[in-house]
Image (cartoon, rainbow, N blue to C red; front, side, top):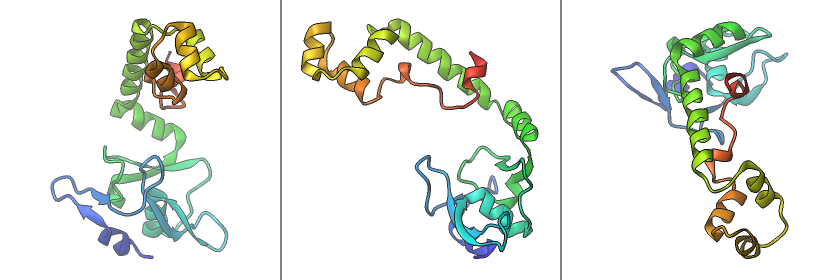
Length: 173
């Protein structure tokens, strides 16, 4: 695997310079690439995140302990080595703050708070529905809530009651 192999599997955006990955992705829709992992002894070939793979291929060096490879553009599928940096966690955090990603998390938390206030469900009622062994129909009749609402709660489809999508969200509340 070479850097040119990765470039060949990307859509090259002439305006932004992004190499948008068209290959395999993980369940969060981030690129996954089979490449040598220089961080491990012997540099074994293995599947890793796209940015790590590109960093290893473009530098031939391991990623230092405590460092992470992160994108400097807003395209999560971009694998252009010119759009990547490798640095300690605090540099990544500063980049994330500057990019405004944390503002998006605050908006998400705010929208979910408003959603909970508008909902007929309370957090306690939501927890009861999720934990109850009763059928959806029985819960619907007992609580006076539609079967669709019961079903959505059990399937985790009520975003107002879901945690925000960042490990930092608890710090922002």
